[in-house]
Image (cartoon, rainbow, N blue to C red; front, side, top):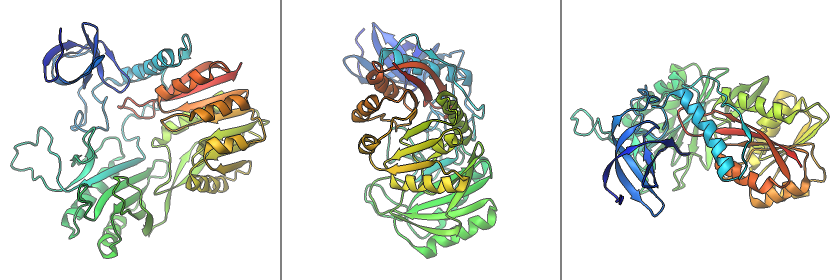
Length: 462
């Protein structure tokens, strides 16, 4: 059968590909279908046709998979935040484990490795401690809103339509954040609408209101409200801060980040404290961490504790080891392991994160960690020790090839690799496999209802 763009076709979905799309085949040609599950029979529209594959969009579910459920969120399938909300959660865990295993087999060419069942905290809603909402001069209408006279297509404060930079859904509730966050979101939206200052326009780069970033401490139920604007107009922003802290006693910090950059990034060139203090405090295990407006922190606090316990188990520390923590960020893993190691040396390119790491050590009474600021490609080569254990927690793009070769040359007896991307984990393991044996991999679900998966891999030197 010849497949063409724009064609309507009935497809039987046989698998779930990494990236969250259903997989069907037509005469051997792979077709990836949005919003489709194994066991579905789908009426689909072909949206892209390439030589070796095609992409399609689900138009109608003719026969539903046994794994398909009714999503609790009305924005499911429209908003990009929860691409798997219509998939039974137990099956989500199964497919995440499968995607890690398939990446190892197909990319790293490593077969027969123990990939354990995916760990989860069982808190599958309200787990995000950070949410970022974008402003737009005109809301994007959902299919249910089109043609309704009661819907005014005015400004939006919400989340992006998948694959777009300027289409914003004006959501009134996100189930991934704690309930108070949705109330704060609604109050901020009402304030912006009544304001005399315009919303920032992404094409003209004119306007004032840009982003709302909410951070939440689950342990202490503290909120930080971070308003990102293009300029500082104190008389416009201060009344909002005063209103919020009066209405919500658990809002302990209101920040105004100011960004004149054209890039749609919710980080300011500088920030102004409007109310309360400059950070909130979150706990992971026995430790506490101060989180500022622009600092990195795992977005699932309970999931982070589960992840770090897995790292600790694989590290096998006895109190005598020297540990090197590559891409250490704000030092959360280093601090979590510190009491079980002789010394931990963290390497991190972001000087702000290193400053956070040092502050967090002082806060937790940790004195056997030191952190080195600079590109890991250069700082790793300057180490004059061979660590007993190396922790590697790179960004989604994985390790630079130069870093992989330096790790092999340094030759630590044990490596614990923490990955947020099975594809780049597998690519790096392919480069390491002649020097290191992959012992075991433990997937950890930090992001329920999405296809994203963390995995912790234990490697031993051959």
